[in-house]
Amino acid sequence: MSSRAIGGSSASDGETTLDTPSGGNAEGRAGRSDGTGADGGSPASDAFVRPGLVINGRYRVERLLARGGMGGVYRVDDQLFPGRPTALKIFLHPQRSTVELFRAEFKTMASLRHPNVARVYDFEQVAGVDAFFFTMELLPGVALDRFLAEPRAEAETSDAGSPSPLSPLDKSAVRGPSAGRVVPWEETLDLLVPVIRALAYLHGRGVVHFDLKPGNIVVSSRGRERQVKVLDFGLAGLRGRGLVMGTPHYLSPEIASSKEGDHRSDLYSLGIMAYRLLTGETPFSATQGLSVLLKRKLTEPVRFSGDNTARVPAWLREIVERLCSVDPAGRPASAGDLLEEINRAGGLSYELETRDARENYLFSSAFVGRRREIEDVHRAIDAGLEGDKHAGLFVTGRSGMGKSRLMREVRQTVQLRGVPFLEVDCFERDLTESGPMANLVLMAARLATSVGAHSLLNAHAPEMVKLVPSLPLDAGVVPTPPLDNADAERRRVLEAI
Image 1 (cartoon, rainbow, N blue to C red):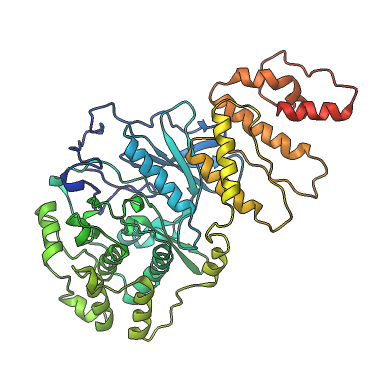
Image 2: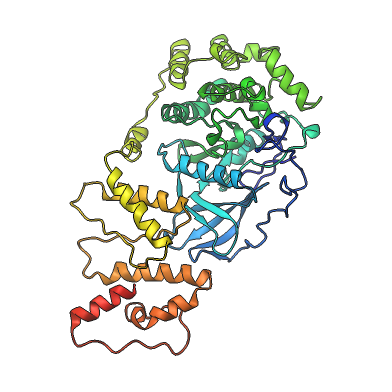
């Protein structure tokens, strides 16, 4: 069994993750629950990650936030962006297919920009180790499952992150979420409407989450305003593959029966979350095991009963029960239609797109019209990987032409190919070019030091030390004598960089 720990808390609700395509693992082979790969290889370990470690010369590890079967999530100090709260999600696994799934999660999240969706920053391979990681915004607050178990938890100062759920499952030991807080229906809507907005945004871009549950929703308070964000897109790359992966209690019937899911699978999970908030429990008990739970999902409708019928308005009960329909056709057609139905039936006026969402659209529009430039980037990367030391590109143009957006696409492209991406900002008001160049040299030196590439540093040190006297170099390195021609001296330093 793989229990999920979010924001450093234990998985007290007993949520368990499925990783079983028709009874096997992601590649159709029998999974194991002892931490080894399906091929019996050595167990993955991130024991090398400890407080104080600097990963890739940039990320200083502060502490562990959460741990999953394939690695952990750590709070780190990004030395290039001091003061920006950052989480580093590490992934260790011997199978290529699951590494590609991790890449797909980053690629999915990198394309998103919405106030109710967690943001990611960079994707890299750990220097000198067969492991990958990506960094993302560190979310203040607590996961919704902890919020339900501990009503005062929202007011605490904590960090929420979520490891990838890809680990084998001991199906005989499934527990159901323990009874938790019953949330008034008005507050339930305030918590879930931001999730509906996020789903409308995601589904409109062809992204299906496939693992929506309280553990993947972060709730925080900022002053008098509550913030809700969706995170952990580890299963978003599985659309249409017919795999049984996810968390049993929130898994849609079509996914549980190995059928192809779509955006309505997320709406089902949302309905189960709504039921749990409104009643304090999920609709189906798992005390008799996973197979019985999944069978009930496929055959029994979700219905409110007892005191819950008096506590929840009839119109809201009807909407939640429709969300939990066994047949996807019985659910609302879209997240947008769902919010319209809530507003109409409840006499409410929730907006589907807030002002913050509309502003974020400016940064997440489709990237078009730059095919030639991206092809040039790929050629430059290929040349560099083949050993051409002079491979490079210079991007220039007037303000507003899209250089920054192009660089965002370049960063994602090169990082997904395992190439480090170093970036500095240059502004017209800068007095000299040496400031940005010095920062670039320092970043490259830290990365080279982290992989033991001291010979590379020392080979160019006599020139680069002129620009950055604080470089971590071997004793005895002295600058080369300056050339009489100042322009030639400048070119020599730039070539060394």
